Length: 313
Image (cartoon, rainbow, N blue to C red):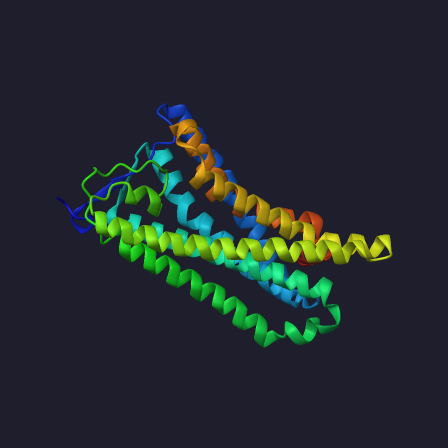
């Protein structure tokens, strides 16, 4: 019975068998990663440099962009390497690191989305108390709590998973190292049950966050519909709808990935769904926010105009 520490490498799911399709996947991932890097870097630099965006909403958006960059940089480079060179292997240490960092960034992103929902709730439903409730110290504490919770969650699951003995081979049914797929290789009943309980706890916490977001948005929409002016309603919706779109994309893809019926499962479908869940949301998030947020669009346009003016001079 080999344990995980004696295993030299894992085999990832091949994106394609034909060389032409492998190169196509490489260029596709390259385009997605460049779009994610460009979009999130623009948000990071704009929020950091523009004084008008130094508010709680954009403070949390800056942290969200950091997690999006982390998700992309954790999974995509190895997938691009394997597609370019026609390999599917990843070392034991690399797999453990990839599983840890992906779970870390994806957990932090979900907690940040919950905090951002609370920010929108306070801004729209309790505008007179916004500065008091969401001061700079409170925002820093909530962001630190999201990062610390994500780190502890990732450390707990990764340490337990990679301590289990593995006796079902080393082939993962995923194009990156993800803990549920590694657990399928385990032959330790007690360790598997322990990880299941960890997952139940994490799922319960995530469900609680989801219920909180649904309740908050019910209150937000009720408050917005009571705003008498069309301009006021439009401004309120313009700050809420991007967050709601990001949350919906994140939750729907993650839920379908892990709860889809086995009867409709196939390697090609699993690959498409896993890409939608792990790669597409981090790449789309900055564009969703920039397309719907007039203040952010104006700040990006102002920054880029200033950069072009300095370059010409």
